[in-house]
Image (cartoon, rainbow, N blue to C red; front, side, top):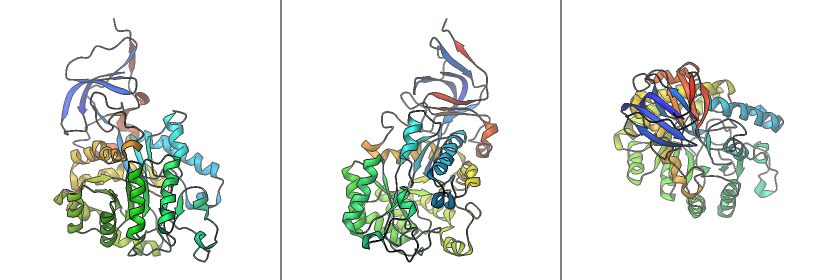
Length: 420
């Protein structure tokens, strides 16, 4: 496939350069300012001066939770749950997100189907079930049910692989190893309270240093890392000391803690939450208020040099998933258009690559347009480096979507070149 007459945003330095890009199979074969001879039989697309950029990525997505209500997941047949997830996988790709890191949920089968091109969807870095202590952020069992550890039955969420409750070092080790057995590229622990869960106030510390350290050791033994749901400074500090590599949320972090993260090379995976993104009950809104200062934390992280990843964390609100790109544009308020696009392309993909040998796409680079990289590309009608809001209207402004060297959307004319 040859894309001619494009303005290239390569995901590396932020500049736009006129040129041409050739993909052969699933890789980028050439990026050139000069003309490229089309191989025999190549599909040739004239970009007409549009911007060609790497596919977008989301570092905190939930493939199964996002398109389903909690009622679907608790009561409905799992066939409906997965049907909704399959439909949303295609919509995610059509929004221009060609790679996601799934930070909790039963996504292993979905990933396999996408990789085999049975269904359309983004590349997936799966975490598997969120690992939680009893009364932690991933314990959605009724409060008066007896915990599994003392004779109770697993909750519906545990039965379907959405969460797993583990207490003590041996159980945490087993829970982590179970996710790797199923195909996880990294594992996720809940180390503090959450908004949508009932039994865990935001200020609570969850998992002891020994339990967190056990999970980190398991992940290290598998050549990868642990990411953690946590908001508060004490929780973040405990995660840092135990060797966690990615802090998910961190909306209550202070400047000193972010400086420690910067010095240690620990990532802040930040979600630009605002009122209305996920409808909340009055009790949940009260819990959420201390976690609502994403922009303040983003400014502090930028000032101290802490690496920031972009994610959305849209949950249990199927009608809200269309706002994935809208949330990305909020980052531009702090980082500017170009830096936001770099975060959502090569930046996020640097974080994903921490999965090392568990990286399912380690054979080539993601998030960049350069020779040898995976051929995941968007042709944008307009210049997102000047107007990032173009990405919000993805139906109109994403003219071509390419993933793994395959065209999944093309609003332009193309031709087959015989190579004469």
